[in-house]
Image 1 (cartoon, rainbow, N blue to C red):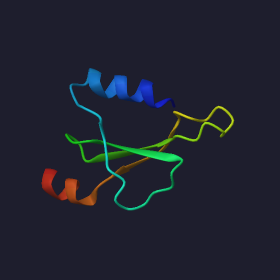
Image 2 (cartoon, rainbow, N blue to C red; image 1 turned 135 degrees about the vertical axis):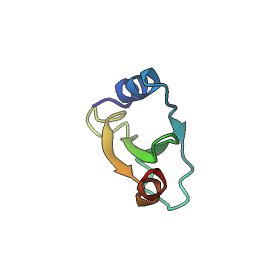
Image 3 (cartoon, rainbow, N blue to C red; image 1 turned 45 degrees about the vertical axis):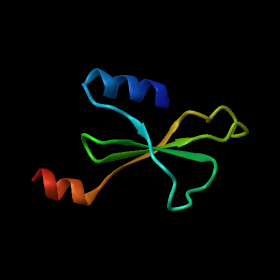
Length: 71
């Protein structure tokens, strides 16, 4: 899935997508974003040399801390 499509769908639900600083030293070919309203982290391929994969969502992650707070 393309990140732009996912970000548009998230915005359509009334949530925001924000760039997240890379304090953990994630590989340079991955950009990180967060959805503050849900605790979701989105990892997006950024490498222009990855055979058309730049801008594709690589993975999604939900913070266990968010689930504790929401529960």
